[in-house]
Amino acid sequence: MRRARFLTALLAAAVLGACSLFGRATPGETVTLEVTNNLALPEPVTVYAWSDVGARQMVGSLVPDKTTVLHFHSGHITGSYRFVAVVDRGRQIVSSSVALTGGETLTWELRNNALLVAR
Image 1 (cartoon, rainbow, N blue to C red):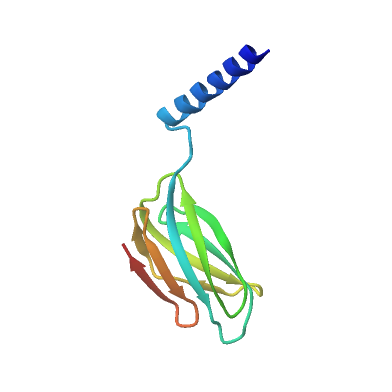
Image 2: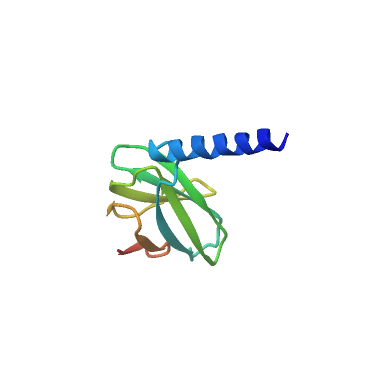
């Protein structure tokens, strides 16, 4: 019985290692997005990332009058992206386009729609 558990654990470790070796593990890349939700009318916001090829991904939600750190994860981050903050009533705030390669930290202040990039 003990030998069977050992062999099962060994097999599982080998499979997980093979997945990592062939790129099937999904550590991906991350961009950190620090968003200050300081809109004149305090409202909750949902943030999306739009790639230059049209792919959209939800990044997270924000509460009013707070600065929140969000993490944008993707298998491979490269190209130009815009971040879109959607206010509950449907209004959108669209950031300027920014070229990303993964690993950046972005600071976005919603009231003035100011997006800063630190590499």
